[in-house]
Length: 115
Length: 112
Image (cartoon, rainbow over all chains, first blue to last red; front, top):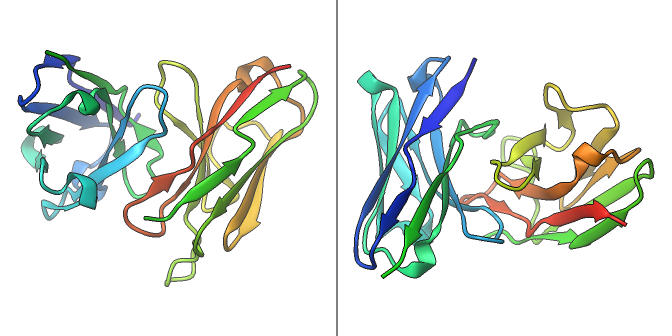
C-alpha cells in the first residue's frame, strides 16, 4: 500500500533552518510528484511547492520561493523540504502529499520555532 | 492566488440529519485542458486531511455514499445525506487548477 512516512518533530530557534524528509513506499517513486503543504495551528493548509520526482525540478509558491528548497533522492525514494531563516510564524505541521491529486498524505511533521 | 470561500464556517448538525457545505472560487476552476480540479477533504484533529472527492464529484475509495459532491465553474457543493458521528471535523475545498493550489478556510461540522 502507498505510504509516505515523514521525519520526526523538530524544535528550532529563530534564524535556524530545518529539513524535513518524506519517504515513499508502495509505488514507483518517480511516477508521481511530491507536494509540500503546511498547516499552522487552527489555520487552513497552505501550499509550499512541489517536485517532479523524475526530473528533479521543483516549483514554489511565491511566498516560500526565497526560503524553501525541495529536493529528492530517487535511490532512497525520499523527498525533502528545507526551510531557512525560521521565525515563530513558521511553527506548523508540515505535510508531504503524493501526486497532483494529493490523495495520499504523510503523517505530518511538527516544526516548532521558539526562542 | 485563487481565493476559495466556504460557507458556513460552522455547521451545527443533528446526527441523522443532512448537511451541506458551499465553496466558491474567485475565478473559474476549469483547466485549459477541460478538467476541473476541485477536491474536497475531511480533517479530524491530529490527522492529515483525507481526500473525499476529486475533480468535483469523483468519490474516493472508501468514502460512504451518503456523501455527494457537485458543481461547476466557480460554485461547488458537498452534501451529507445523514450525518454520523464519524463525520464530525473540518471540511475543506481545495483547487488544483491554478498554481499555487489553495484551500478554503474550512467548515467545522459539529453536533448541535
